[in-house]
Length: 365
Ligand SMILES: [Zn+2]
Ligand SMILES: [Zn+2]
Image 1: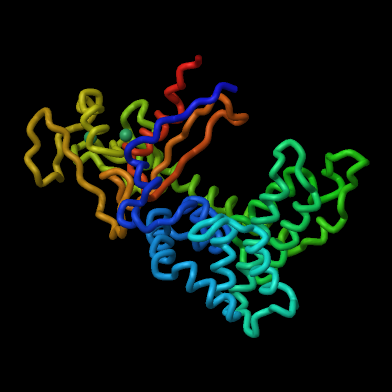
Image 2: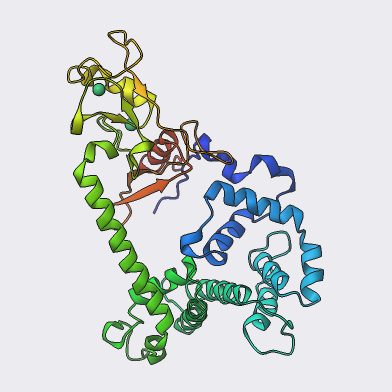
């Protein structure tokens, strides 16, 4: 496949260099964010992406690696975990995966170097980070996964789940393990020369966590689908071709004109409303309830309530309400995927869609 690079839309530039802390952020900040979000938080208590970045930038500045290491070497369990995360990705310290294991394993095993007190949340997160490291090992060669490493990843994930800690990494391992057929003998699709490990089936906490999450997603989808099907025009931008959809009505602007009931027009942005006005004004009867005097050709909207926001958002129109776009990618097996965000505004989401759907291909020599 031809190598190409998509241009980073300007709304995303500060992700590469978080501006308030740019001078003091060490290398590999993004891999550190990924590891933290994936392994240190449960799937249902993920920090908002923008606030999460700020939180981690503060953590790195307020707890420099030298002092974390000194405290870890004195046997403080929390700092063993913190240091291991930084060693694993090389953030604030030179990358040393073996070193990460050296600080993590005593948190989950009865080793001579085990700290005298290991709080349960620290132990659970240590299992989750170890699962993440083993998963990376298992999938290093995308064409031939290391099944032994995958089993170790699944076992650590199972231990985390047994302690009631279900991180995105735990769920990801369960999903991937199921996809390659390792959950049960009936679905195993590797050859006889690489026999199925019956131990996979015994990871009951891992499978329990995955099944519970799948049931939860199904319930959420059903509830959401029911709500939207009752009044679909309230959840999508009315401008043809825009494609922004939302999960909460308040994330869209309402036309304050007289268009009524289920046909009430909603817009992702002022720009979309203006673009659609020529088409919409034919069906939008003059407003009765509006307090502003509308001049004949000027579209009016009532703004959604401002959410209480913390930290910077991507795009001026971002307000902490979730918006989604569908993105079509010709090279992908499924063809389309949905991008949802509470911190990316409608305009930035559409920039992102444009950048992915029409990448400016580098000229070929
Ligand atoms: Zn729109
Ligand atoms: Zn209207």
